[in-house]
Image (cartoon, rainbow, N blue to C red; front, side, top):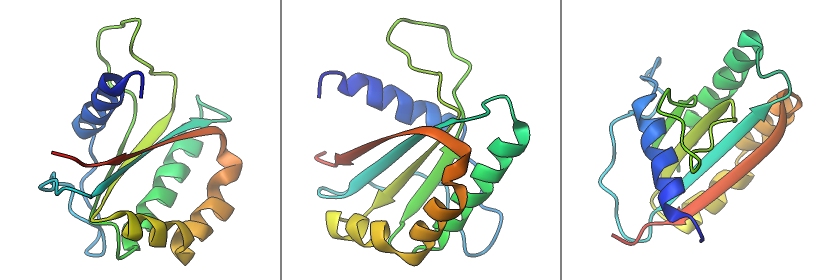
Length: 139
């Protein structure tokens, strides 16, 4: 990848905006111990109506449902951080989420899980663009 530091910077920005769990079914938002072979699944959403607080809240509500997927070991979501503007920072997205999976197989299982499929079906009308970065952990 040409800009691995950009992905790392975006990941750190997400951690700064991590949401606390709101139900007993949600995964903790504390940072896991990264194990070799684990997968970080980072998703960036550009809303069709980026100024709509209602659409942003609905998307975050949908993302929260994904915490119910057993293979998701850890999850946080957030919005662009209010950091100094720099040419290398991409901050025109609306909402992001980062998930931690123990393995590629767990991430593959998540992709076909009914909760993930329902999320895409029920919330995809809110976004105009999605970018996904899947990183295999190699500490």
